[in-house]
Length: 321
Figure (cartoon, rainbow, N blue to C red):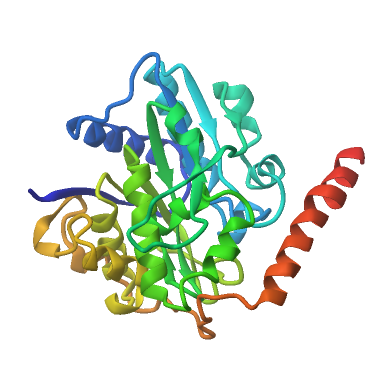
């Protein structure tokens, strides 16, 4: 069976254009048996890597989150929860910096830090791999990644975004437990994605990030939104559009190896914009300084200390002011 991918050209963050796309993506999810309706608890998983303003293109844009919240409210869902595990800083501080604060009052959404890590048995046998058991408290999960280059994994798209469900500083530790093998790390990400199995993935590519992402790159006007239920098919289409070498998008290569989702373009059906050639760009720049997947122990220690400083010192002083 072919995987359906909805893709529209959307040049900027105009609310009505985004809402129209979200409503069509909800219809696509419903056709796949994962519709949204009354009484449901829905978890939204954006990319909230660090506390950056929306124009930096590090985090999923708040206009995309707002359109999703508005569409869910129209579906009369019972609860909308926004969650992630930022690399630095608390969820609330990072989410508010990303522009999500108004969603709490407008749509009754709430921020909920991830908790209750439980072991995930991975085919890769990566030790200490745990994800938040909180995901089992929700009827639907919507994965909301940002199109970004990545110094370690080349691109971060739908599959990679779910790594945020690993809580806190377990993430850099796991980077060090895959024998510096990027494809093995990607296969671990596929195991996480298979476990999470989001009802819908809707990716913000209106303003993407090129260069030394996921935080140090520069905004790139890619001008599109894409959505689907098959993470591999979605990542494959986005990889084709930005022109990244397939074998170097390590999470996607891992999905091909593990036969997770539809990798072949012949098994992917596009809706909305149906001509892939018209969407391709030739000036999207990948990282100029690729990094190994493993962090050295000193960097991991600095990461722990920086996170403690952000939460224990900077955020408390900002709150006092």
